Length: 323
Image (cartoon, rainbow, N blue to C red; front, side, top):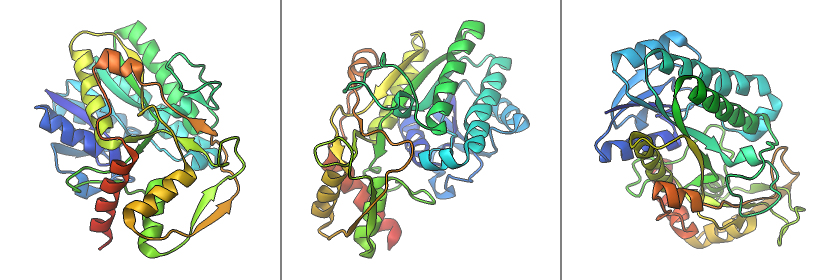
């Protein structure tokens, strides 16, 4: 089966391409390389294009006889979305609408969507289950919520079945260190800490006055390999005739920023200088997943997501690319 992977040259998309290939699928990467990396194009064929172009989408879907889609092609920075919401709605929402329309026109009816825990906003309770109210705090979060709404409407109107996977904090790297996390600029905590450990430079932490035990934000970290496994499980869920749905992907345990810093110093054996800074707009104090639905309905469990393994694999990748 040919599976289109939009944003497949990026961090999570490339890991999913590797997992798809390992499970006998034929990934086709669709990416404009504005955020992705050509060196990640190791599994499947490649079409350089953008979801902003209906022509690119039509040509790729037809040329490669696509039968299902995994959709990752989105901008992902919360702070940037607050500063430039138009870019996020244009790329994340309008691009997704273009993709869905192209799929319907060709009778492609199965899609796995890269959503986010950002749809929940500031949670009223933790762990967060899929029935929790959704009230995003940023245009990024709203863009993901808007696409989930599109998916529900396309299911009713045209029978396009979709699984939305709401990630908590993706982290770590492929165990072979072939691929890993690299963004420009880098805003994610773990790669920023590893950069600081390697360079001996200070790292800023944003907000130390949250209502948490040590004053810093608490996040649920999920290994990118576990995310890739979940995407294939979601695709198989759809191929087996199961209905559309949304699933949280997290390990079900949270760690504060300070806890992650201490563990990073332990894994790397290097000191990390810390500077405190103001809170970032759009950050919730605590996000921890309930993953019971994914365990029950997708048959998925996080196998690689203990914090030590996340940091060890990310550090191995970082050392390789920074040499």
